[in-house]
Length: 471
Image (tube, rainbow, N blue to C red; front, top):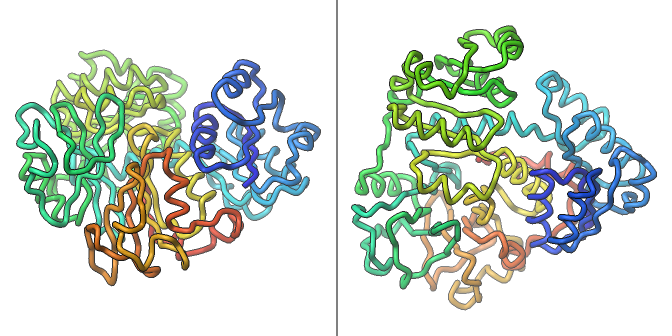
């Protein structure tokens, strides 16, 4: 697929990195020479310096023959204009990043009347992801697949864990559970039975939802009951993500406080929100946090514009007694730090945006997907295509790469944790855990053809997009 990306900031760079693993033909336009130099040094792409709004530059980038243009600059207006121009020049499909809350009510109008197939709002998507984490029953990260029947849970291992210093083959796991991945010192391992589990490892455990919950209890992980869901939430930072999140929480009947340092922004938040208490102050002030009873909060969300500040605040809130702590971070390099210092959850607008766009590009029979461990690994729910190499033969005979694990099969309402003699049919839903660098091998195994269906058609396919949970 020929893809043009306008803007190579955090999201654009992540997209380039992910899409090159699938052998797409990538052209990148950015107005910073430093960014262009970085792209040329690290990737095999055509990098062009200039303004993506320019029709002449879009013609130069061969936009007329592109299957897709993705506009993810820092300017909503530039993204919209670039997409409109690209469509006029002949680009088959376009995606625009639009972040301004004032445009939210106009998104459907823009899609319909400006011929923009998909509009992504990173802050809104991030707020929805935080909302999902606030409402789930774990303090740490989980995500569900197969209509809620399959769950992946993140498990931190310490020196007192019953799993520490043991080989996986010697651990008595329930039949409906597997250890899908191990994150160790920033490196991802797709394990087999001979791999050891060590203190400070982070396990990603996959299996039937009820069994995962039971397994978590045996390890002493706290699981809340429905009546323990978050009722009081404190948010530090009053940016767009905080605004969208407060709106969502208000609708859910949750008591919300926002602490924001900028007085003018406090006034804007107070005018735009109905039942949220907006406080003018420094969220890093320990005395202020104590005054606002952070220890009584069901959840604490650090959503300032600075990763380091969010990490520090989250640690502080955890020490002061907040039950569940979530930090907004952008840098993938912080992933290994987050997993070892005791922060319950971290959300990355960059990864959330990249996930949504990647799912559209891949099309095929992908029902849902999630990027994990700083984008180094993916979990994908796939419906195999007819003629795929993986169907109608035992898995042991398929030749699956070490960086790919078939985690679960959803068939006729039942969950199967497959072994080597398991056979996948074309009517199954399959949960696959893979390293990002192996995604093209997954595409070949499941015969996921790119480019055969337009993004517009995919967006209107309820089969592909109807029941995927926000990840």
